[in-house]
Image (tube, rainbow, N blue to C red):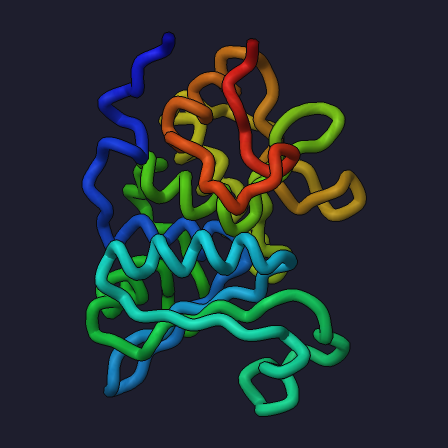
Length: 206
């Protein structure tokens, strides 16, 4: 029987900074006098359910609703967005530091000293992780190209060196390949959530 790593998301205390994993994917964060709000459009309801739990264990309230409904009441502005689920936090000062770290002006930017820690990697995987025929993909934000290289570098420092692939190759995403890197990712992420399909969450290789 394998033992959980001390660095597994199962054993590390949850931190608000971990929610930066949604920003590594296609999440967005905005600031106002009432605090910051983190939101992300997700392709599957199971992702919204699992991430809702990640918000709440960090004492940040959040909600989700179908994208079509969010579009009809003005919470989404992207034309043609009628599928998927919008997950968004309440507006809170608990997220102010995260907003400062992940933005330069009004543009999303990766923190210069970002550490691809277990909690952040778990949130990123829940938001945008999936298998493909060549390895495991961590989805990136197609509207924030400048974040791709810094995120790849942070993953490499954590033992998760991967290949950046563009939209034509099935991305944008960071593809993790190789037994050692896959095992490292599994080690960091901890126990798969019960809602996740087996094809979506990386599992230990037998």
